[in-house]
Image 1 (cartoon, helix red, strand yellow):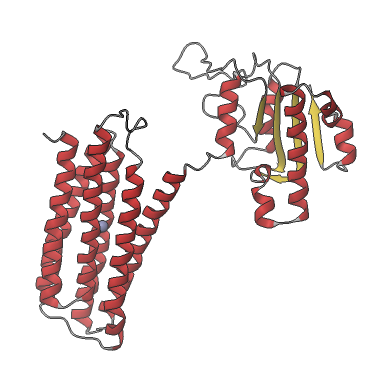
Image 2 (cartoon, helix red, strand yellow):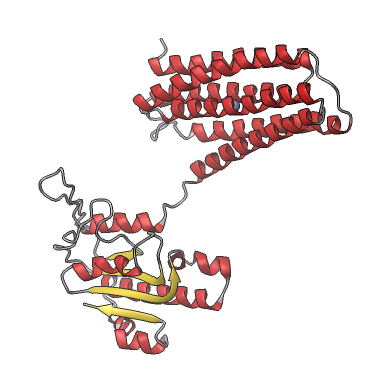
Length: 372
Ligand SMILES: [Zn+2]
């Protein structure tokens, strides 16, 4: 007995089969490569619909002894396979369309082709709208993504129909393979997106350091004040000994207020720089708020001249390979290491590295350490 969400995935499969038939017939009657490419695109939809169906099934299968983390990662394999199919479809279109650029042919029965594709497009529009609505209402990203995909296909089909109409009206025969190539490019774009998603899903990339800093603050005891909730909320974890906050948020972001750090007692080091302006309107000083607003004692703020949001991970040094960025990252490493050594290992030899005057002197004023 399929779950009700699976029923919608079956609707998507049926829509794909119907549009494949209609668009293939349209291509066969007219000989239009634009319509052929649109039909190929519908095979992509079939693959996507089958993928959605299997995902909803897997999601409904609970974790067990053999798969203690559940089976949701299968989605990424499937998305990778689907991406590969899409690239094949696009290659097929290019292979058919390129010779036609130099050997153009006129189209037969363009009006019939347009009418058939019009019906297929109406099906995609209706099913896409239903999937999007149900996906959003039932919090199923699988159905929602499938619905969005079908709605973008509506636009692709409009483009193809316009192309066929123009070819019939103007007699500019090369336009037909050109439209097909455009559709192939669009299909490739979708395919690359899927492959990228599957790779990043399988590799579990790190979350950005801005978010890591936010999490560190919440675990450290920064309280959240939502207007609709009476008392501030704390997610503090008593286990960590010290906290490093690389370009973290200050007051005004996601429930943090000026009072969020009132009760923060554990050691903290915040790091920012003169070009750390990733939050738009805010100044780099905003990233120093956890330091200034928490009670004094074992608090450090490292401010690096010329450092941007990406400097603190060493990424900017890798990308630009400039002496300035390497120097900035050297100070990030030296100061954060000294901080960990002192508070995690009680290594007092690290103390001189946490003296503001010494840091200012040996960096020639490029690195500014403050201490409270
Ligand atoms: Zn599609």
